[in-house]
Image (cartoon, rainbow over all chains, first blue to last red; front, top):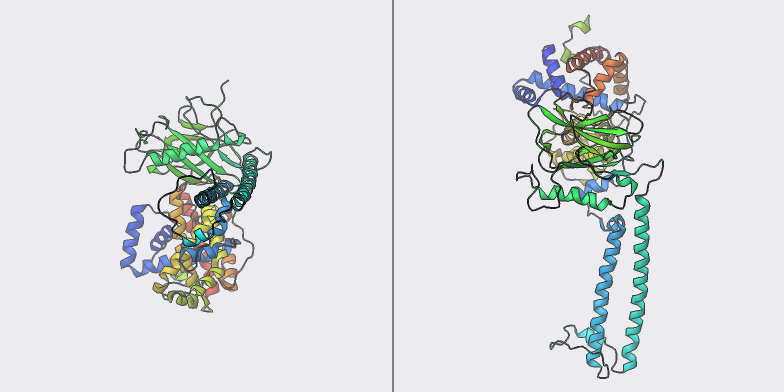
Length: 349
Length: 193
């Protein structure tokens, strides 16, 4: 047992070895019980230090439910929540139900017209009789008054439902407008377009609720970019069957400052040369110089992909993002020379 | 005299993180028999501390929650293969969590600023580690310089797993870590002896 052994175990535990060194260590550990013992003891020490120094966090209430559902130990009850996830989905479901209901009413009215000789609006009916015998017995009587009254009632009720639906739609639209409205001092999800510096575009920061660059358009571009370039194809160039995609590199950072969680969606990013990487930077109103966010993985320069990132603090409110191409492990501050993408574009002076 | 004769490995705290009550091992044994109540109990036992550790490793609460969930899925699926002679239950869970966090770190862009300082406040949970273990580790960390301690904590929480331009050179990091591990060896060993 020597200190080299001990050091190696520590470097392996702390992930300080590169892939090849780690592989050699793991192979050696299989044959050397002392090395394995050293590694296990480092694990034990790490666990003790982590448990002592990391403050426990209060888990969310549904974490156990999610875990049990994932393991099949409990039936998932997503139906309780899915309607609440989007007002638009609620409206869509209501509209479908309403349409089906309306179709049922028309069908019933048609059937009533067939059995009512005096109804002048009777439509041609299929030769086959109704399959459901109970439905026939439920039809109104053959008298005109009895036939028209339920239809009027249904029409009135239908009109009322349409009014309610319209009100709901207006409420949802109002809610969405409020959600994307800029409120000073409030952290909002930030979505912006990043383009090459030489391409002049209108300011597309969604936080400003610009009607000419709606959120759906930006996210739509991001989704199209992701779906139009399958990984098995050469996606360094825009797909030929996707004429709506821009020819130049683009990126869309989506950042939620309230949770310090962001995703960067890139497309058409050209492959880097050997020893070069793409670095992401963030600019804020408080700092003149961009702050380094991180390096995109090596395999990022291929068509479209998305990467999660965080800024380390929920107090950072980005005013822009910059993507630079630099030598590996030597990111330089963004300049005109190394900037590949920036967003939002600097307004023309 | 005794301290100088101790080899580094033997000086490490072999008694740390022991499951003295056998509670966690019993729960894992029940999980191996597909007892869902055991999973719920173990989740209640370890989830907050694992979530805190994962947050320190990932710097993102949402990602930390997912990593902890991955960990419990792994523990559930591998409970039958758990060998208490190899490692203690909590250390096993910690190593699984570390692997889950590493997988997530490899997929995400590194964070912009270093993690918030790791608190050293007392938040002992006797069902995770004994009060004596907490005391021993704190006493050992108190022997370190601020640089050594921050290097050690950063290493434990995988901050060096992703190279960051603001990090000190790797050689300096390893020197700090080597000094830190040497220093904490003795206080922990004293308590052991």
